[in-house]
Image 1: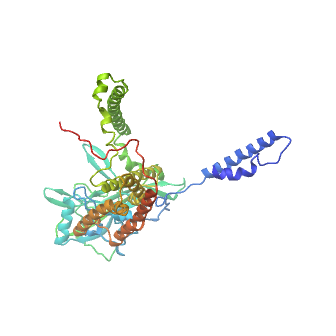
Image 2: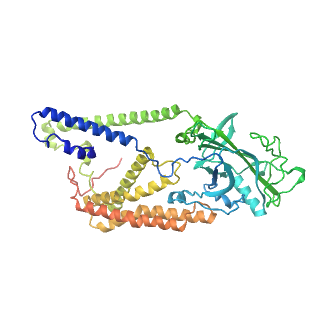
Image 3: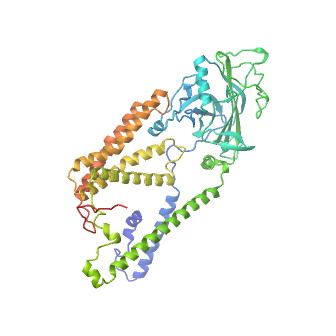
Length: 523
């Protein structure tokens, strides 16, 4: 609107020269305004952009699609592990860590490359990856990970892996926790050494080999005790290894033979790792590929959520209405009592105040103990409220996409830091209303109290994560970045807001406050 007003200023009829037909000139000016407004809106609708980190990527037929691995997670320990902290197959060129932002470090993500090679629309059944011989220490690590139900978290085109599990004779798809490292049966531990990767793609054009986009990634793990045909052995230097007796390259969908023994974790026993690649065309567009992860493949109907929300709202509204009616009834009774003309006896007895007027002089009185701490907590609460509201707004707009890992954590940190001025301003206004004199100490306490408690707790937990070797441990440079955000941005903003708050006049209360607290009495 502002831009259009600047453009239309030269066409305003009030600045045009006088004419014999003022109505005609005014109609022409209005028509020009309507045309230019339509032109601006038309151009604005055709301009679009992708959020950082979530732009689509087209893959040509036969183009390499990189498979990445993330941390190993468990719901039993809450301590994520590095993927290559366990003796899995490593890439030939060495392990490479991809660039991560501060939010990913704080979330414990460690995204690295993998030895798995897949190509767009190119199926590969029963491909041998590597052979590993576990030592006694490696076997203990794997058994511990399986006992705690650690799960793989693989990524293809920024899309996490999904696994299919069978519960109560029905298929339920789990999309957020990858697939298990192995299983424990009768106190024996079996490793999942074969995976079937099913990648869904969406073709961009209706041609023979069009470029496509990845819209789905499912992984089905197996535990198979592989054997080469004719008792052949693994040759790491030779890529054309002999065929397996337990795995067929002729069948794309069922490469693993049925009723095969599982691969138990035994030290000094060679174990083969294999995988299948299967590509399937999908009708799901790229913009909707995250929907199946968010709604659990429609296993939980949307009406259940709406019913719960409406039920909670009705309960809150009903209880609020009941409390409001009780308060209004008491207030109305007190007002009627105050407005009633006193009798001669009541005048002689000098009728005392009753009801809510008994505490009108005590409501706004400053606390006698720790008024500075009270002001600090009020300021910090205001800062947290504004931070939460802004985070919800940005998430609703779409800036905090789950495809952009770590964005939520970064948004919360930055918004909390930027709203430090609100904390300083609120605590300063409250402390001045309480007639405090130690303004510098109150401001310093506001800048250091709550962040100091959070940082101390975080540092202790970080030391524990370092002790257990978890990826949850934050690196030293990330810790320095947090301190820079605290002392370089948040603290100065708190002091700036406090300076503005102290310049404001003190709050005037609607009633006079009593310096002596009223005795509450005993019951």
